[in-house]
Image (cartoon, rainbow, N blue to C red; front, side, top):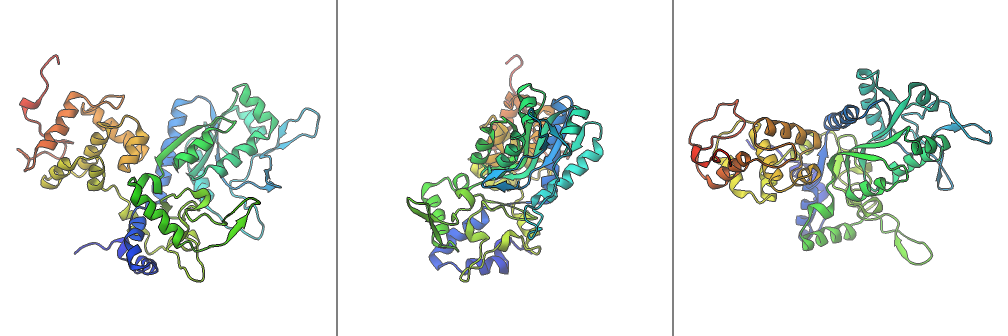
Length: 426
């Protein structure tokens, strides 16, 4: 019995039925390209990334859950209180992890998920990690690293606002210039433009990303296909309202999402506002599939299954069709195909973000597979395949039948005939 797919659900069919017959193929492609992330995966990845900072940096760290900051006339408020003396000095406690900016709007967004992750980390790393420390605690505990944690960076605007709130505090600027404190930003995922925007901030934060966010520009590499998807988003945009900024009129809501990012990622607890409008914004004539940026609980398992590592798709993207044929025709241990995908990607790309973008593997998964590949002498510390690793790939590319011998489940990859081994001393 074939498992039900997300695209075959009544919800997806209802959404697709709003498009004309000639546009439904593009709409289905858009829907299929959304990468859905579970809260468990976000938790695992953020813990791994923060753990990497703790391992590589000395001293106590402060963790802050990124959230929306209050503003007055477009200018963000300071994150800490200051004395009213001539020489201003930061004082008091830190910011609240969850603090809605409007009293009438008590919605808790992704900051609730992130705040819970921070609490879990603080419970296990009490001697080194403090949650949302204020100036008094930063001085007393000698906090040396301020880590802002979020699940997603779209345009980078909200993270920059949060950094601005720190940067407006004179003591923070002073500590930073003296190298007494350093800023870090940790996110499960980020778009390229979002990462670059945050990286250019005056605070000069170091950025740690679990996996690059797929966008219309990265997923649809074919120019004609990409244009058809963008045209689709413009044609069916739910809100056609425009505003005039004094020079020309423009849409009030960008059809590709906030700041025109065109992100293609959703989370089990919500959808970013950077995804195309046709996916989440409703109108009298349009019913979105993720209404109010909320995921229908009934389709969450199907979305997660749809977003699992697709071995076939990843290898085709890497132009390794022969290796894909090899995997199909041979009974390999369950974990082997993931390692094969990693090795095939590492053979072409050197950096983790490139490997992640091409395969869908996260940085923690890449790290785990990298260590396994090193232990089996397929690759070195610098992500360069060894001769033995290259021989493994070459063997799979040239084989189109069953393996010469059945492998034990403890053997991670394959039997390689002796005549394919490199000569001693080579």
